[in-house]
Figure 1 (tube, rainbow over the protein chains, first blue to last red):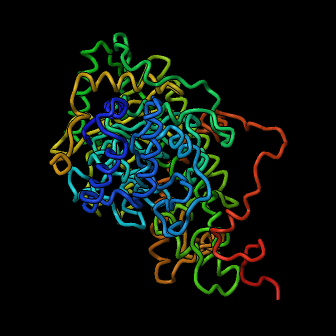
Figure 2: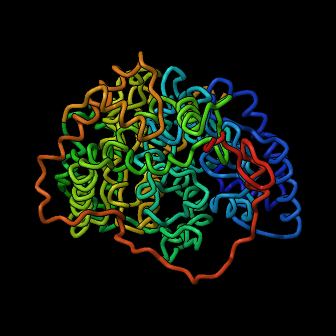
Figure 3: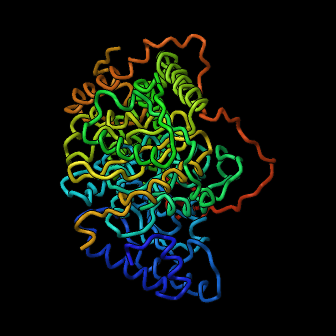
Length: 485
Length: 95
């Protein structure tokens, strides 16, 4: 059951091969027996899941045919879920039970999905390894001495270990794509504004975007279909028309022009990872695509630009956590100032505090123009690189990460080394573009991710290319050893 | 840009964070390293470049000025650390 794709599961549910309740019990049983070694879940909601499954079974029995009706899934613990704790991986929100649903949560509830639980993540989505979580590190199912990537590492590990067929993630600087690459699954960061941010705990509001994580491009398309679209409650969500993202999957790739940015294949790229990327590109070439060398000259500047803009927005967004209205409050505050500072000091972890301090610096009087405004200017140059490139190519491809999953603890003592992990993913968020990570086989037994980047709102094209690659390869079907036993 | 311990203490105060005295030196080092990284930006010529706040250059969408939300004060206050008679409680501000 747990090896079936979402389309296969939906078909089996409709033809009564098994019920959503049976499927849900099976997934919950796997989480109970296997997840202690991965720590991919922060909360598992057995009772809620079984109630949702019974409801889905009733809808199926009445003849309803939704593509996600009765399908189990997990949400990154950043999406608000009514009545179910939404911690964002932080002590600050350890006691936070939202009184409302995120738009993404609501749409998927209405579609009849069965929410199994909430997945582990870097605290407030700030990290690339899922090691900054208040609930302990998540471990990579391919090698439990290694990180699953982050910040959506719990969702990636849970999907890779076949605990759940579908999960949501969020991506501010690579947080869907990098863990998807490290765990050998398929993940899509949509165009900025494509998916509502309402009820998705804010990190950096001009960069944050929610999206699907699954085992195949087709499964990602099914999930994106359910969550994409204008939300009147999110003033930055886009009114751009929504397509049926499964409609173009079967288009041939003949004539497709794929740009290979020279900056993504230079020094710093692990050789074995590069070999896997070239093998995947060769497969796309065989299907009629043309590879074109391109340049994105400001790539290197995406790291300093991101590490001004994201912390600046974070320092503003996280000022709401003050120990007054919800979340953690310190014991016996002496006065109001003590209540604020001690609640924040005790409620936030080290990486979150570092980013708040850097952001406060970048926005403070005397430094605003030299840092924040400067970063916003360079951000425009970075986006222009992509717009220039898309004048000549349909999509851009390269590695998602410089190398495979690194060891637990290997980079925790050096924030800069961790930041450099994101060199191929940050620019996409700064430019607001859609991008995917797609499995491209393994290097030394660890998964490698091929990144595909498209023009604004061209998710359908990315999913088409990824699906065609997955028709010609079996990389996305490869599973870590523990989970298939 | 060099940062000193007293700069970090001032930033922490602005951000309503408290750094333990024994940790200030380490935090200063780490912030200085990060600021060293972002200093790369200073070498880029951006004289004619408009700052970009939104990657789609979108403008704020407006809605009609009408009440559309229910009042859910009780639900929101049910998750607060301390409330009384519909008010959030904080330590006394004025003696």
